Image 1 (spheres, rainbow, N blue to C red):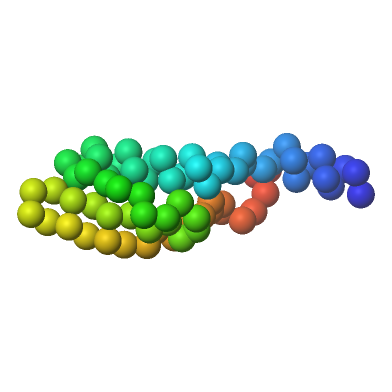
Image 2: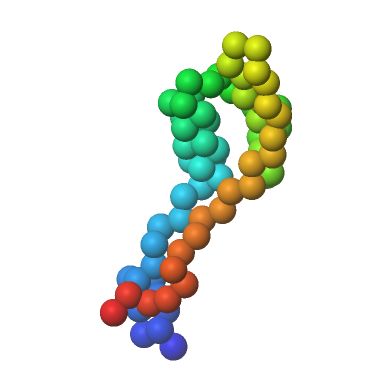
Length: 72
């Protein structure tokens, strides 16, 4: 079985941490011209976005996704 484990490791994609995903979401919100306040940093993240007189509170569910197969 070690050969299978080595192949899986060689063909896997590195997972991004929840903190990195959270940061990417916040940067995307700011890049779109909104400001954001983190209401809860546990998953799902609760974020308040605001711009001028508009305010939106939402939950952000985010995961790492892969194609689910082996690269040959």
